[in-house]
Image (cartoon, rainbow, N blue to C red):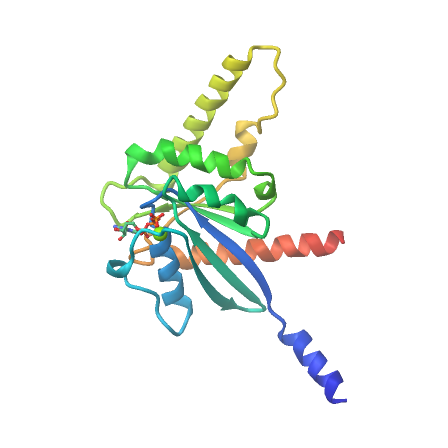
Length: 218
Ligand SMILES: Nc1nc2c(ncn2[C@@H]2O[C@H](COP(=O)(O)OP(=O)(O)OP(=O)(O)O)[C@@H](O)[C@H]2O)c(=O)[nH]1
Ligand SMILES: [Mg+2]
Protein backbone atom coordinates (compact mmCIF):
# COMPACT_ATOMS: atom_id res chain seq x y z
CA UNK A 1 0.00 0.00 0.00
CA UNK A 2 2.84 2.36 0.93
CA UNK A 3 4.54 1.71 -2.44
CA UNK A 4 1.28 2.27 -4.26
CA UNK A 5 0.73 5.60 -2.52
CA UNK A 6 4.32 6.77 -2.91
CA UNK A 7 4.19 5.79 -6.60
CA UNK A 8 1.01 7.82 -7.00
CA UNK A 9 2.56 10.74 -5.13
CA UNK A 10 5.64 10.64 -7.35
CA UNK A 11 3.45 10.54 -10.43
CA UNK A 12 1.45 13.56 -9.27
CA UNK A 13 4.47 15.62 -8.23
CA UNK A 14 6.66 14.63 -11.17
CA UNK A 15 8.35 17.57 -12.84
CA UNK A 16 9.58 17.41 -16.38
CA UNK A 17 12.94 19.06 -17.00
CA UNK A 18 13.67 21.13 -20.07
CA UNK A 19 16.94 22.64 -21.23
CA UNK A 20 16.80 26.19 -22.56
CA UNK A 21 19.90 27.54 -24.29
CA UNK A 22 20.66 31.25 -23.99
CA UNK A 23 22.74 32.21 -27.02
CA UNK A 24 23.92 35.43 -28.64
CA UNK A 25 27.05 37.49 -29.27
CA UNK A 26 29.38 38.44 -26.44
CA UNK A 27 28.14 41.49 -24.55
CA UNK A 28 24.51 40.86 -25.60
CA UNK A 29 23.49 40.47 -21.94
CA UNK A 30 22.95 36.69 -21.68
CA UNK A 31 24.46 36.23 -18.21
CA UNK A 32 22.73 39.35 -16.92
CA UNK A 33 19.48 37.77 -18.14
CA UNK A 34 20.22 34.42 -16.50
CA UNK A 35 21.03 36.07 -13.18
CA UNK A 36 17.86 38.19 -13.39
CA UNK A 37 15.79 35.05 -14.05
CA UNK A 38 17.33 33.47 -10.92
CA UNK A 39 16.50 36.58 -8.89
CA UNK A 40 12.90 36.66 -10.11
CA UNK A 41 12.14 32.95 -9.65
CA UNK A 42 14.43 31.55 -6.94
CA UNK A 43 14.66 32.23 -3.21
CA UNK A 44 18.39 32.98 -3.57
CA UNK A 45 18.98 36.00 -5.81
CA UNK A 46 21.34 35.82 -8.79
CA UNK A 47 24.49 37.91 -9.14
CA UNK A 48 24.07 41.69 -9.47
CA UNK A 49 25.19 43.11 -12.86
CA UNK A 50 28.42 44.62 -11.46
CA UNK A 51 29.60 41.14 -10.38
CA UNK A 52 29.17 39.57 -13.83
CA UNK A 53 32.25 38.99 -15.99
CA UNK A 54 32.37 37.82 -19.63
CA UNK A 55 31.58 34.10 -19.77
CA UNK A 56 34.42 31.79 -20.71
CA UNK A 57 32.39 28.58 -20.75
CA UNK A 58 28.88 28.14 -19.45
CA UNK A 59 26.63 29.19 -16.60
CA UNK A 60 23.61 27.23 -15.50
CA UNK A 61 20.48 28.13 -13.58
CA UNK A 62 17.33 26.17 -12.73
CA UNK A 63 13.86 27.46 -11.98
CA UNK A 64 10.81 25.51 -10.86
CA UNK A 65 7.42 26.16 -12.45
CA UNK A 66 4.17 24.16 -12.22
CA UNK A 67 5.05 20.53 -13.10
CA UNK A 68 8.14 21.80 -14.89
CA UNK A 69 11.79 22.59 -14.25
CA UNK A 70 13.44 24.92 -16.73
CA UNK A 71 17.18 24.54 -16.82
CA UNK A 72 18.88 27.52 -18.49
CA UNK A 73 22.29 27.16 -20.10
CA UNK A 74 24.02 30.48 -20.73
CA UNK A 75 26.94 29.93 -23.09
CA UNK A 76 29.79 32.36 -23.71
CA UNK A 77 29.29 34.40 -26.87
CA UNK A 78 32.88 35.23 -27.82
CA UNK A 79 33.90 33.92 -31.24
CA UNK A 80 36.09 31.03 -30.00
CA UNK A 81 33.62 29.98 -27.34
CA UNK A 82 30.79 29.80 -29.91
CA UNK A 83 32.49 26.69 -31.25
CA UNK A 84 31.22 24.73 -28.24
CA UNK A 85 27.56 25.71 -28.76
CA UNK A 86 26.68 22.77 -31.07
CA UNK A 87 27.61 20.34 -28.30
CA UNK A 88 24.52 21.52 -26.44
CA UNK A 89 22.09 21.33 -29.36
CA UNK A 90 21.17 17.63 -29.04
CA UNK A 91 19.67 18.03 -25.57
CA UNK A 92 18.06 21.43 -26.00
CA UNK A 93 14.29 22.00 -25.82
CA UNK A 94 14.20 25.74 -26.53
CA UNK A 95 16.53 28.57 -27.53
CA UNK A 96 16.52 32.19 -26.38
CA UNK A 97 18.72 34.20 -28.74
CA UNK A 98 19.72 37.54 -27.23
CA UNK A 99 20.69 40.61 -29.27
CA UNK A 100 21.94 43.92 -27.95
CA UNK A 101 19.29 46.26 -29.36
CA UNK A 102 21.47 49.26 -28.45
CA UNK A 103 24.42 48.11 -30.57
CA UNK A 104 23.46 48.72 -34.21
CA UNK A 105 27.02 48.13 -35.40
CA UNK A 106 27.04 44.49 -34.35
CA UNK A 107 23.51 43.56 -35.41
CA UNK A 108 24.57 42.03 -38.73
CA UNK A 109 27.24 39.97 -37.02
CA UNK A 110 24.48 38.86 -34.66
CA UNK A 111 22.27 37.77 -37.59
CA UNK A 112 25.10 35.73 -39.14
CA UNK A 113 25.50 33.84 -35.87
CA UNK A 114 21.71 33.56 -35.44
CA UNK A 115 21.42 32.06 -38.93
CA UNK A 116 24.12 29.56 -38.08
CA UNK A 117 22.15 28.46 -35.02
CA UNK A 118 18.92 28.19 -37.05
CA UNK A 119 20.59 26.03 -39.66
CA UNK A 120 21.56 23.34 -37.14
CA UNK A 121 19.28 20.32 -37.77
CA UNK A 122 18.68 19.76 -34.03
CA UNK A 123 17.32 23.33 -33.67
CA UNK A 124 14.86 23.04 -36.56
CA UNK A 125 11.79 22.06 -34.49
CA UNK A 126 12.77 23.72 -31.25
CA UNK A 127 10.87 26.80 -29.95
CA UNK A 128 13.00 29.85 -30.60
CA UNK A 129 12.66 33.26 -28.99
CA UNK A 130 14.54 36.31 -30.16
CA UNK A 131 15.13 38.79 -27.34
CA UNK A 132 15.86 42.43 -28.10
CA UNK A 133 17.78 43.27 -24.92
CA UNK A 134 18.79 46.62 -23.38
CA UNK A 135 15.42 48.27 -24.01
CA UNK A 136 16.28 50.59 -21.09
CA UNK A 137 19.06 52.25 -23.14
CA UNK A 138 17.76 55.45 -24.77
CA UNK A 139 17.69 55.05 -28.54
CA UNK A 140 17.85 51.25 -28.49
CA UNK A 141 15.99 49.56 -31.35
CA UNK A 142 12.37 48.55 -30.72
CA UNK A 143 11.05 45.03 -31.31
CA UNK A 144 9.55 46.21 -34.60
CA UNK A 145 12.85 47.73 -35.74
CA UNK A 146 14.76 44.58 -34.81
CA UNK A 147 12.25 42.44 -36.77
CA UNK A 148 12.53 44.69 -39.83
CA UNK A 149 16.31 44.78 -39.61
CA UNK A 150 16.46 40.97 -39.52
CA UNK A 151 13.96 40.63 -42.36
CA UNK A 152 15.93 43.03 -44.58
CA UNK A 153 19.19 41.27 -43.75
CA UNK A 154 17.63 37.87 -44.46
CA UNK A 155 16.16 38.96 -47.81
CA UNK A 156 19.47 40.51 -48.89
CA UNK A 157 21.26 37.30 -47.98
CA UNK A 158 18.73 35.22 -49.95
CA UNK A 159 19.29 37.42 -53.03
CA UNK A 160 23.07 37.14 -52.67
CA UNK A 161 22.86 33.36 -52.39
CA UNK A 162 20.53 33.10 -55.40
CA UNK A 163 22.83 35.33 -57.46
CA UNK A 164 25.88 33.28 -56.49
CA UNK A 165 24.20 29.97 -57.36
CA UNK A 166 22.63 31.07 -60.66
CA UNK A 167 18.98 30.95 -61.88
CA UNK A 168 18.72 27.17 -62.33
CA UNK A 169 19.96 26.23 -58.88
CA UNK A 170 17.57 24.44 -56.54
CA UNK A 171 16.94 26.30 -53.32
CA UNK A 172 16.54 24.66 -49.94
CA UNK A 173 16.05 27.99 -48.17
CA UNK A 174 12.95 28.69 -46.10
CA UNK A 175 10.77 31.37 -47.78
CA UNK A 176 11.10 34.76 -46.08
CA UNK A 177 7.38 35.07 -45.24
CA UNK A 178 7.38 31.67 -43.54
CA UNK A 179 10.57 32.44 -41.64
CA UNK A 180 9.27 35.81 -40.45
CA UNK A 181 5.84 34.46 -39.46
CA UNK A 182 7.39 31.88 -37.16
CA UNK A 183 9.85 34.30 -35.57
CA UNK A 184 8.94 35.47 -32.09
CA UNK A 185 10.60 38.67 -30.93
CA UNK A 186 10.23 40.19 -27.48
CA UNK A 187 11.82 43.25 -25.90
CA UNK A 188 13.55 42.96 -22.52
CA UNK A 189 15.85 44.79 -20.20
CA UNK A 190 17.91 42.12 -18.44
CA UNK A 191 19.26 44.75 -16.06
CA UNK A 192 15.89 46.13 -15.01
CA UNK A 193 13.97 42.88 -15.47
CA UNK A 194 11.35 44.34 -17.81
CA UNK A 195 9.86 41.69 -20.09
CA UNK A 196 11.83 38.88 -18.45
CA UNK A 197 8.78 37.14 -16.94
CA UNK A 198 6.97 37.37 -20.29
CA UNK A 199 9.95 35.72 -21.98
CA UNK A 200 10.09 32.90 -19.40
CA UNK A 201 6.30 32.37 -19.70
CA UNK A 202 6.60 32.11 -23.46
CA UNK A 203 9.37 29.50 -23.16
CA UNK A 204 7.41 27.59 -20.50
CA UNK A 205 4.26 27.43 -22.64
CA UNK A 206 6.14 26.50 -25.78
CA UNK A 207 8.15 23.64 -24.26
CA UNK A 208 4.93 22.27 -22.74
CA UNK A 209 3.18 22.46 -26.12
CA UNK A 210 6.05 20.69 -27.85
CA UNK A 211 5.89 17.93 -25.25
CA UNK A 212 2.15 17.50 -25.76
CA UNK A 213 2.69 17.27 -29.52
CA UNK A 214 5.48 14.73 -28.98
CA UNK A 215 3.36 12.69 -26.54
CA UNK A 216 0.41 12.85 -28.95
CA UNK A 217 2.55 11.50 -31.78
CA UNK A 218 4.02 8.63 -29.80
N1 LIG B 1 21.79 48.99 -20.08
C1 LIG B 1 21.79 47.66 -20.08
N2 LIG B 1 22.96 46.99 -20.02
C2 LIG B 1 22.91 45.63 -20.01
C3 LIG B 1 21.69 44.93 -20.06
N3 LIG B 1 21.97 43.61 -20.05
C4 LIG B 1 23.30 43.50 -19.97
N4 LIG B 1 23.88 44.73 -19.95
C5 LIG B 1 25.31 45.03 -19.87
O1 LIG B 1 25.95 44.49 -21.01
C6 LIG B 1 27.25 44.02 -20.66
C7 LIG B 1 27.40 42.56 -21.04
O2 LIG B 1 26.53 41.77 -20.24
P1 LIG B 1 26.74 40.19 -20.07
O3 LIG B 1 25.52 39.67 -19.40
O4 LIG B 1 28.03 39.90 -19.43
O5 LIG B 1 26.81 39.73 -21.60
P2 LIG B 1 26.97 38.24 -22.17
O6 LIG B 1 26.03 38.14 -23.33
O7 LIG B 1 26.80 37.25 -21.09
O8 LIG B 1 28.47 38.26 -22.70
P3 LIG B 1 29.47 36.98 -22.86
O9 LIG B 1 29.48 36.28 -21.56
O10 LIG B 1 30.79 37.59 -23.21
O11 LIG B 1 28.92 36.16 -23.97
C8 LIG B 1 27.41 44.28 -19.16
O12 LIG B 1 28.07 45.51 -18.98
C9 LIG B 1 25.96 44.37 -18.67
O13 LIG B 1 25.81 45.14 -17.50
C10 LIG B 1 20.45 45.67 -20.13
O14 LIG B 1 19.34 45.15 -20.17
N5 LIG B 1 20.59 47.03 -20.13
MG1 LIG C 1 28.06 35.87 -20.26
